[in-house]
Image (cartoon, rainbow, N blue to C red; front, top):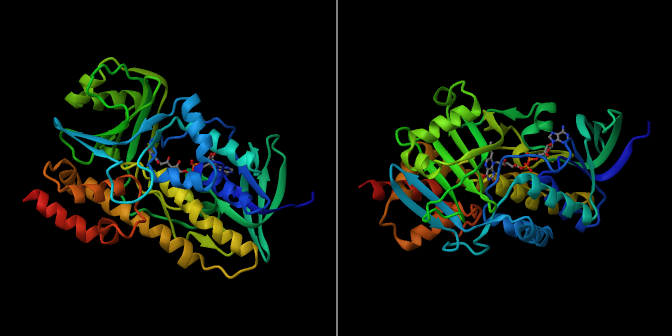
Length: 411
Ligand code: FAD
């Protein structure tokens, strides 16, 4: 069988794959995306951050998303709400330090990911559904992938460059032995969609609700409302905290332990399948090689608490695409200096706030009622996804600034 050829082969048509494909076809390259599933398909990761919208605009996909928001009713989102033992607070993303969009959407990922993939296809990317990547061989002038198609026929395709956007599939980390342990402990999540039947007039559907367990500060819940009266609800904790319960029974049990949530969600009705994800944090020893780079979750995945996953995935696509373009044009490219390190800078900023969330210190900042407005806007910018804005002191010196703030809030 003849080996097929493309300039860029992308593994996975999730958000990072679709955005990278759009950016590269716009530069005139022949891009083939291999996606093992058919779309629409379920994915977790339903609350976007406003920073995402700039990456979608850059890839020419924002209009498609805005159109779908109208027709499918993606839920408008302008911030995050927090609840802990009866204390409520909100962060409004439109009041933020960094420039850029201040609003976004809460999306059922089946619809959102299909919208991005269709948009990439309309721009000229070739997407092959039910094509699964099985092996990777590095060659002198690119990389060869072994693939099975929808009829289980095996073929080979060579890309001058390969982008791994396979998310939790982690195709190249597994095949190339790049897996490395996350510095976060193993956590699990139980989640499901519900018809929420929320009748509390104070409940704001335009914000994700992040709810801290009344007794265990390292257990938290998400409540992501959609515009059709349904919501995604999940609980996150360590394995010994969640135990070997069935996902729906476990989730319901945790909801009942929090008086605010149990009242708010008293009339909830579960829809579809409840699921569990166990041990999702992951890292790699390198984000690139001679003929490949890892995007989004195929690289590092931190933690779901601040909904940074899709934003990091899109940032990775936005950073890598111009470098791949230069590489294909025969220019010298420094993936360490221009991809891995700048991506890591924002990921490390999120890491600071995620770690401080679990030890409770950032929770104390969030629930502190007398925050100065300027500081509030700097924190808001980070939670809106602007973790690469080095003008923001809480980004540039995240550990130092956060520690000072924690001391102030705890005095
Ligand atoms: P994905 O979206 O996972 O896409 C990867 C694609 O690759 C899939 O379509 C898959 O079918 C395909 N693939 C896999 N293997 C192969 C193969 N061998 N061959 C071909 N194709 C393959 N993020 C947020 O932004 N907001 C949230 O609210 C949020 N909540 C989360 C809650 C939990 C509990 C968890 C675990 C994560 C959450 N995330 C959230 C993170 C989010 O799910 C991911 O960061 C995001 O989906 C990553 O996008 P991606 O493009 O890297 O990969």
